[in-house]
Amino acid sequence: MSPYDPSAFPPFAVTVDLVVLTVRRHALCALVVRRGEQPYQGRWALPGGFVRVDEDLGMAAARELVEETGLCAHEPGTPSIGNGAHLEQLGTYGDPKRDPRMRVVSVAHLALAPDLPAPRAGGDANSARWAPVEALLSKDGGFDREGEQPAPLAFDHAQILADGVERARSKIEYSSLATAFCPPEFTVGELRRVYEAVWGVVLDPRNFHRKVTGTPGFLVPSGGTTTRQGGRPAQLFRAGGAPLLNPPMLRPEV
Image (cartoon, rainbow, N blue to C red; front, side):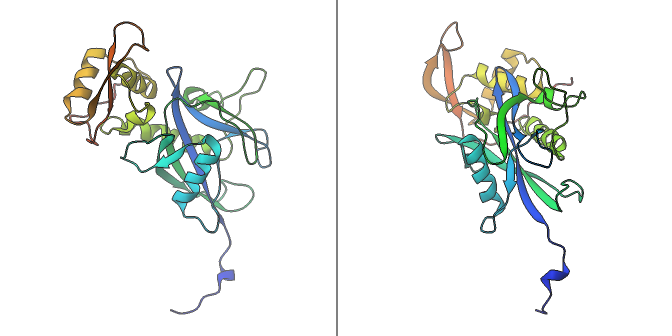
């Protein structure tokens, strides 16, 4: 191998950004942090950070997920055990001007988990919260609190968030990804409300029940029932081993 001079190449950094989605109060929400330092001080952003020299990308994303949410990542396609979350690589973002500090390439990851508690800020963030995706991606300029002027998410995080939301919306059509938003045991009605929150639609309960229970191994009865939704006891299920929903549940036109 012929030698080369590393100094002949411009330095740049690699970061991981997290699109952390959950369903809270029947709405699809994303975790955002208020930046405590420049650039974009005071603006809302997706959680994330620089990749350390001894980490690969998956390790860095899993570390940031633990630091921001307390959740441990599990492999895509495998059920969550305990305090875990689905984590998968979303995409790479490398516009030379995306970060005013220096050339920074970000490898975004998508994380999905059941309803999560209020987050605690860490690192260079001075506050963190769950915000409805609809508000974050609105044409008015993003999420704001009472008395604040709406402003877009920092960096190119609005695009990253939009890509993450679209990934979730498309994959639940044919995969078991929607169960990542549910606790280990859930009812068909609770799973239906996940689809409704992610897609922003209202689904027919009977048709939905028939589709998700019609694929062998997609949902497996846990043997219990619950009345937490009110009314008569509802059967509890857990995610089965079937990774695909066949036939897929096509997203309604909105």
